[in-house]
Image: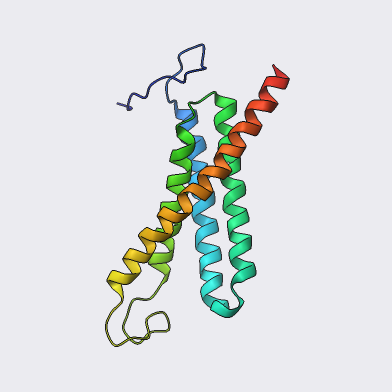
Length: 155
């Protein structure tokens, strides 16, 4: 049984969250996951001194994916609060991927101290997710606004 979500405010047919919506968001999730894993692994390979261009490219790729998610929502006439879901999911996923890729073992390249860095890495991942959520939500909101303009012109 699928969960019941409220219909979109501007959706005249009273459509519920359908399988097509779930599929679109799943494709978005896969794209963002692949981008996170590939770019964060690349940042780890190049080191912190040369990671600026790689991080900028990652931010643009994930930002474009969030923008596409906003466009998708506009085309499906979904409610505005769903852009926050895209931004929060993208931010949380980025924090999780960073947490998984980093090596918290004491004495490793990522944790040069004598004790393990599990707690600090976990807190850092949460902080990164919280800080990136508004950025990615902004990309999704821009996509939603652009999509609304485009679909109003078409209809």
